[in-house]
Length: 166
Ligand SMILES: Cc1cc2nc3c(=O)[nH]c(=O)nc-3n(C[C@H](O)[C@H](O)[C@H](O)COP(=O)(O)O)c2cc1C
Image (cartoon, rainbow, N blue to C red; front, side, top):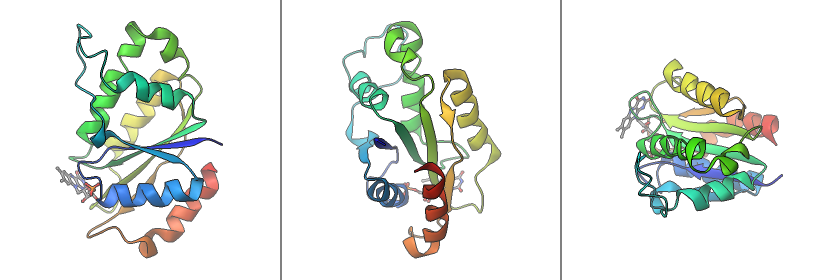
């Protein structure tokens, strides 16, 4: 399986990135850090069509499984990830051919936050998006990180998650 981990945090060396690299190493997956790409907000006039969004989607549709990695920011996905999903709207209008290739694609979410559990709003956002786009949504992995991400603390949950998706 050709896995891709899309990292969408405001820091490239933070908790979500650390978790993502553990997952990516175990899956022998490639990673892409949205922080290092130029993906601008959704534009009704599509004036941003030459930014890094379409090349990223091409990488995504050529993968077998995509793991979206985001911190919980204000009970929701990060702004980087929300901007990415806003731009998927481009695939429902101007790039429909590419958009169709997303249908049936298996995806999952890994997240870090400080609260004990993932908020239901966060979970339902991904479930609804997956339902709309025809993505096959697998159970998320959530690592509660009151301090810095600790592999030791989350090892068992990570292994359980990997056993389900790999
Ligand atoms: C802007 C902001 C908003 C946050 N909102 C939440 C939240 O709603 N729920 C939660 O559990 N943690 C929240 N946190 C804590 C982060 O999710 C947590 O520290 C996470 O591990 C940070 O990951 P990062 O290092 O990839 O940014 C918030 C942190 C920031 C900076």
